[in-house]
Image 1 (cartoon, rainbow, N blue to C red):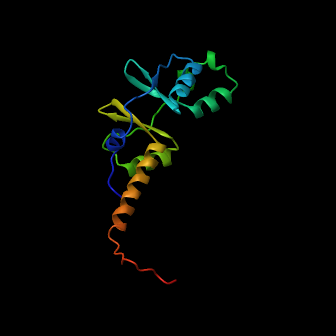
Image 2 (tube, rainbow, N blue to C red):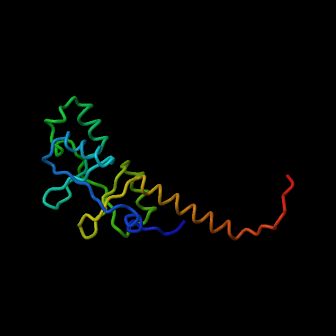
Image 3 (cartoon, rainbow, N blue to C red):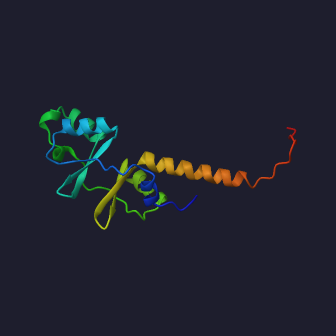
Length: 152
């Protein structure tokens, strides 16, 4: 497969990074996720990446613990200790991190500055597209005799 790097995947995505503050209530975070049809928000305070809040965080740490979303702060249930990548990380390495760390979203940092986020879906789509290009390239090299059919 091609040697795809994360910056190529980011270039194919809309450049919106959806964030929430740690002081927002979980209800507001869920409303943002619903509005933008996304499964996670990066948690930032004054330009510093603190964590991520995902649908799973809400399900397990709020609903599963019988907490009131309106009274629960994002900072109380967000995931800290993020698994990250850089724009130069390869697609293969990013997939390895997602698989091994059992996460679905990877913030992309360039010199400690947040430049994007890639999801497992973004990575899977990039792999699928790369495989399609390889199949097309290989198919074009197979000689086909006109008006010939194979007997099976």
